[in-house]
Amino acid sequence: MTVEGSNYEEMMVEDCGLFYERTTYFFFSAFILLIIIVVLNLLIGLAVSDFQ
Image 1 (cartoon, helix red, strand yellow):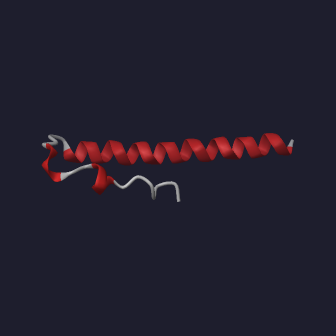
Image 2 (tube, helix red, strand yellow):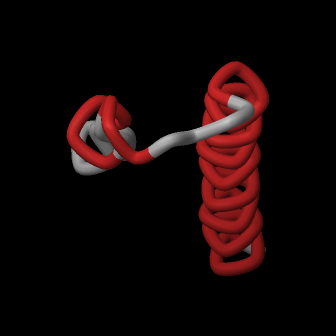
């Protein structure tokens, strides 16, 4: 649900002359995964603090 809005294929076009395609894909994937982990941890922390 959180990753549906970021479509890598639509953002990166073939003709843009990207030199480091694999590196860009790795950093994009790592960024998405880290953001998901951070947001979920913040939501869990908020729920736990409201429960106490």
